[in-house]
Length: 143
Image (cartoon, rainbow, N blue to C red):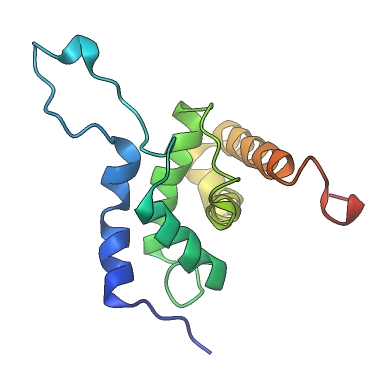
């Protein structure tokens, strides 16, 4: 049984990167730079991430259930968020996205690309997020 995207889903995924990196759509210039707030777009509800969460509830990865270049692209933006915006809480709204981020950050290639320190930070942050989102309970009382 393969997993396939609908055209609408792909259109939603194509715009995730701009949603995550900055939700302030005004142009930055000398007059407003002091008031500009760089943000992730993930502090409030986000239709595109809702769609991603739904897709990831059905499949562990974005393309036919297997890790692909699409996962490298999307996960890199998502993992950027937890590194540079540590106060953003994702698990309560998007548990499948957090599970996906954890899976991608845990890959050997992620550690090779970004180094063990970054990988360790991401995994620790995601584990804490998942644990606190689960009421602090560990799965099966073990993990």
